[in-house]
Amino acid sequence: MVMPNRIFLLFVLTLLALITPFNVSASTLHGTVYDWSTFEPLENTIVEINTTPVQSMVAVDGYYNFSLPQGSYQITVRHYNNGILEHTLIENVSMETEGSFVLDLLMLPATEFEEMFIDDIDISESIVIPKKSSQQTLVLVIAAIVIILIFVVLLWKKVFTEKVSPVLPKEPQAPAYEEDRKALSIESIPTALPDDLLNIVNIISKNGGRMTQKELRKHLSISEAKTSLMISDLEDRGIINKIKKGRGNILILNR
Image (cartoon, rainbow, N blue to C red):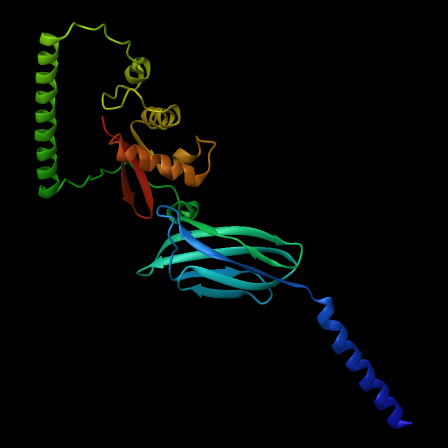
């Protein structure tokens, strides 16, 4: 009686071994991690997915590949530069069918995600804005000279043209945002500034001309990434100055 029982047990184990692989469906998730500013593959990126157990890999050339059973997962991607978190991204994905799926990831700056866990910054103390270097001053002087020369050439062409051709009526100019400029008392704001950027300038002006980036986000109904890009746009235009204070940013209007 012992031998038949062992044969029956062996038969059950063999049957389970044959059936189990067909009950587990798996899919392949792969893609490339890109830098948000250059749209180039971001090398040496850590890609982690919350499977059981957690799968993690270093995408040396920006390419990652995971084998996943059906289900919903969260992908966390981090990129460090000299030990400092420079880019980060959290993406949710649902694998409902079998197959090979491509999910390319666009990395965003890590500053916005870090500031979510930072306490309010005391901006009452004085802030020292770095002075421009001598090289920057030389570049500005050269640029001013070039602008003056261009203005002289254009003025000469205009005078010469008026002498040899009839005067044409001037075309109507686009209306300027004079009311917004007077309300903010900021002479450096361009007249053609978009409304969304003008709204940010107005908020900072009503808060005394400076505030933290974290406090600014409370007044806006847009994503953190878009807020960061709009602030960078205003900084490039020379309208605001972004100062690193601790682990956060302080925004100052250039009056």
